[in-house]
Length: 75
Image (cartoon, rainbow, N blue to C red; front, top):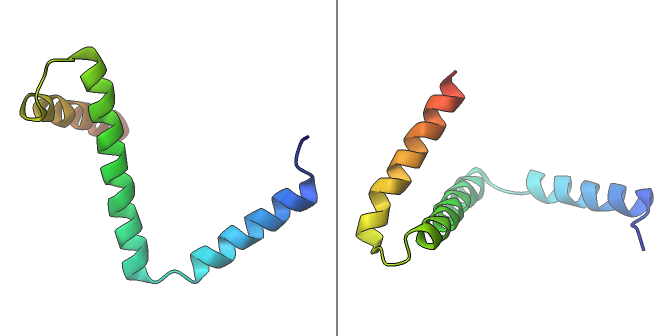
């Protein structure tokens, strides 16, 4: 069963109201948490390609990926 447009609109309004009620420090913390989650997901992907690698061995690969991404975004 697909959601109705009314339900979608209601959920969207609720999300906006919650966001407006969030303090600057909460938004900053949420941004940091999202970044950490992204790094964890990247590490999980790297572990699949390098199953025996330690975290110390994977960190340079994470930095390399982040650097490539920054370069792509700068274009």
